[in-house]
Every structure is written in structure tokens, then in C-alpha cells.
Length: 327
Image (cartoon, rainbow, N blue to C red; front, side, top):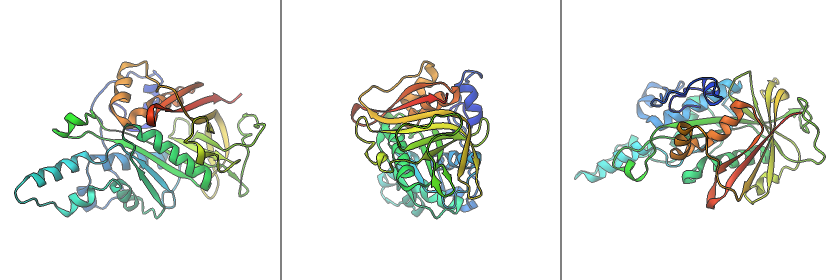
């Protein structure tokens, strides 16, 4: 996680849980590792942000990115690059550099990710305006449940310069990322009976949110069951269940056991308004930065409390995320 006054997930846990005072300041966007110098000079802040949170996630999760499918979710991509192209087109010569042109596509961040990490895995890049985080989470969960594979979710947004800012006023850069992975034992998906969580009475597809170490970046893992349930999760009332805890990796990098689990987390599309945050500074971020719609979920994970989080989704609906601690 990277945002205004929050540089990474471990320090953000303390802020979101209220154990450290939040001091709002401009987002510090890191220079990503892995890119050749020439490529680093070509990328803008939004690509740096996407790569920064993605690299944090895989580092804390302890997974290799070379065969890790990814979902990138952004409400508008690189606004600064769009601004520069508009300036060029407003001039008499109307000359656009090749770098500006290839950075203008919405999947630019995914392309630079594959260069930085040498990943040959598939990536999906989506945009759903202010609802891009919820759409990205739903897409990533669908891939994990249906394909039984790990998936990296990266959500990110950055400000537009004027005069575009007047029409799309995103005040600061914000990004977050999750590694999602199926729990596998002896080559088969396991039912959820780990870390003191009771075995369910009926098989369902489950997403298990966890951390690779105490205070580390969240990992999500999907237990087995009906593999098709997430495909219909776009309908009101359809669900995918989730649990959270700490994972121990197997030789192939997939977690096979979960200890210190937080609990189950259920997802469904609901006819309910989105949750607001009690902290006015956090609420201002949530309301004004599309990727920061993740903040209520991140705060609930940071405080490790049970509850229902409604994240803004399409057509006045929400993605309802319910956390239930293990008994």
C-alpha cells in the first residue's frame, strides 16, 4: 500500500489501526527496481506507483512474479501522459513522441511490470471509473477460484494535471496490491478446516486472505469447492467466502497450511450503499481517489475485527465484504 502519508503496508497497519498518528503529506512514489535505466526514464508516476505496490506485495508474500498472473485496475491510467499528448496536439506541428504514444495505452503498467519482473504470465487490465477497485477485486477472485492459480491484484490511481484536473479532481496518488493464491495440499485444494476455522457444512469456493509474516502484506488464498461460483458473483446475492491468516509456503511457493488465521471473508454484490470511514482524513481519501475505495477493507484487515465492508460498485450497488474471525 502506498498513499498520502502511508508508504508501505506495515506502517499503514499502525496508522489504520489507530496506533500511530496519521500525518497527511504528499504520496511518495518510489522508483521501481528491475527496470533498465532507459525504461525508468520513460515511465510516469502512475506506472511507478503500480510497480511499487506490486513489488511490495510479492516481496512481503514471498512469491516469485515470473509465472504470476496479474489484474491491474485503474480508473483512468496515466493522466500526465494524456495531458502531454493533448498539449502536443494543440500545437501547430502536432508531433507526438513514440514514448508518449506507447505510454498512452491503459495496459502500459502491465507491460512495464512484465519488463521489470520478467514475468511471462497473462495480465488483465481493467477500468470501471470510480468502481475500478471493486471490479478488479471481483475479477482477481474469479480467476483464482476458477483457474485455481495465484493472481496479483494491483489497484492504483494518480492525479491529472490542470486543466484535466478540473474535470477529474483526483488529489493524490494511491495504490494497493494483494497476492491471491489457492491453498493446495498434495496437489489438491483443501476444504477450509485450517487454523481453528470450522469445516463448512457444504462445499463452497473460498478466498483466504492471509499474511506471509506478522504485519506483512496480505496474501489471499482460495480453498476448494464449487469452482464456478465466482463466475456468477456479479449477481446480487452470489458469494465467495474468504479467510485470513499467516501462510507457510511449500516448495513450489504455494501456501499449504495457514496458521494464525484471521477468519472468513465473504464477497457478494449487494444493493447497499458504500461504507464511509469515521476518520475524516481517511474518508476524504476514500471519496476522492478511486483506488482508495479499498481503505475500509484495508482498515478492517489492519484492526483484525469482524464486520461487513461495503465497497462502491457499479449501478449504485456495492461489493459486500464480510469478515468473520475464526473461532
